[in-house]
Length: 290
Image (tube, rainbow, N blue to C red; front, side, top):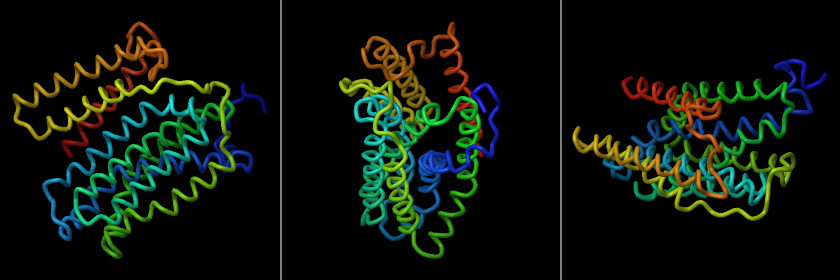
């Protein structure tokens, strides 16, 4: 079968691709599951530790650091190679999981959630980037479709699993269930993921300023949700300015975080990114309303 022939769903589960498929699914599933974890398990945690005013930040910090980590994942992969980048970021996620699961205060939980988000943001982004490298072109749409299914399953199964663990065992168990999954993921990465890809290169400039600007913009959006209408509008405007500045800075950098035509409506890539952004904004609006 050649790459020009349409791939079959069953092929991604054959012995040749099954392990790689499982690695990518597990990497994305950890992000998807933990995105829904805090809202289910932490209401029980605050009954034990207090800090109810901070509970919303457990999800906010996770998502903020996941976005920042995902933004820098491509450059980290270029510098360290896919295998090392996945192992390092999985280690950061594991440390965050242990910190959150053993927390004695909500402040410690927030530190753990931030580390979880940072590590898993990198893991998830690299897993998506590896799909075209580890699968022939005929199977790439199928694997991307499978990742979308993982998010759908996590949206329904994640809260249910976290709720059962919290109710039957402890809220800490809802965090600790990640530990064996991360260890399995790391073991499979060491065996199946190549150390370096053809496009990787050793010397990459760390995009600290751009990542800081992106993180600050997302934090302003989060703060806008806690402010009054006038202040919220100002915070959202400032966040928009910072995000535009991040794209502008990236366009003038040697080592880019985004494609060369990012958000340019005259290009296919730019139009595609706008479509992805607006679809997610629309979906987030309905989710927030519900």
